Image (cartoon, rainbow, N blue to C red; front, side):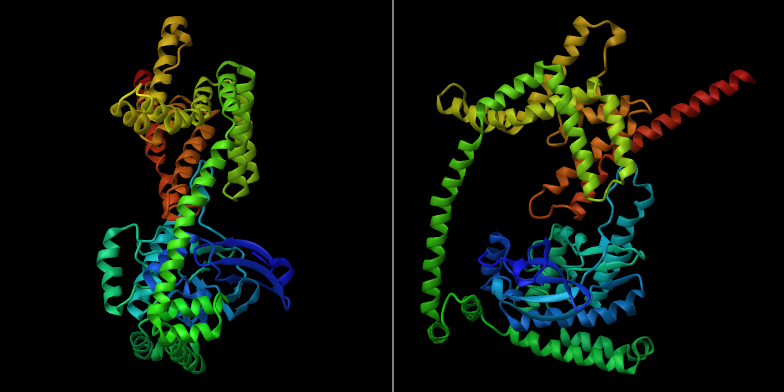
Length: 546
């Protein structure tokens, strides 16, 4: 970026997504969230270019960004009609040009809220939030948006789109606030294929373009007029008239935006970004074939440079940056030096607890409680086993990505061994390690010193989720003194898997929450098992006393 945004009074960067960056600024005594629609993801720009002819229109089309502003104003009134004080949208104060990044921006209120809480051993008071948001807010909102003509906005409300969950924050007054109502890509990539086939594709065919925040204005106007009496009673006569005026303006700007053809969108984008002059834009608007030829050459050259120059250079740089000898040395030290392993265990556990605390998912009191448990459990054999497997993972990645291919290239192993080693490497090294520990304890330790590892053995054979092997074993073997720590580790590992899922994953998404709740299958079953066992013991005691 050529200009320092802080010097341009654009405040502090507080977030970014597929449609742009968000800055917090203080202006005229108010805190504002300024959303600059500048491209932050090359893949997103590519998707938009392929499907629409240019990157995200909010960044270069004044009509598009005015539509974003007007939709928020209209929804501000309709959400109050639909949900009362339970749901509202972050108020929009207007749109403008952002010179530093050559993009348009929209100014909204700064919302002091937080995402729905994740599930963990201390989240009981907040476990209602996810269900309330998905069942009582997002699903009915999707239906009302579709009924009123906001066909494209159901994407940002979460229909088949798990990422949309983080578009909503919970305010201090327990009101859900819709903070992001502008899409980054057309609504053609839902996780649920039924949503694609049953809703998004039919709507796209109807509009004759990829669905992108489209509003069926005639349907919206009819919806509002049919409910005139109720809306006037809620908003007043002046408020109703204002609503109709906003719909009229939305119709005007949406028609101007959507009427542009693919080639003209591309030309306008390059012009607004000052990559071509106005004279060139006028020429290419009259000679569109020349523009298509120019763009194909530009994109072909760019793709060649990225694939055959930048990507190999980046890969080479990464390979050179890996300190292979140190990695091997630290792995051996970790395996055979108890003090070093204990320090590593302590550092890793404390870091994971701190990460949850920084996200606001753990209170200071709960985090300190887990740290105390971690201090007491450093000598736990299961915890040591867990950390050893985590510590060996980077080394195993090197084996899978480099050693096995090198052995195959040298003719020392065949294709079957290579495929099995790469595909099942994690399962193999977890199984071998656990079997080795079980055999060692069986041969060396007396019966009362052995630690069962059957659960860890079988869980370790599950792809990806095998990393939960020893935390699961800890849950079933844990005493009351260490149960919360072992449960936290299970939630932490599973949650991190959800956050790393490509495209549909990430922090505070429905994907992350789905994976976050998976350990409940084990933890709740364990608690139910212990409860049944305790009741059985009490019945026997009562029978003996009688």
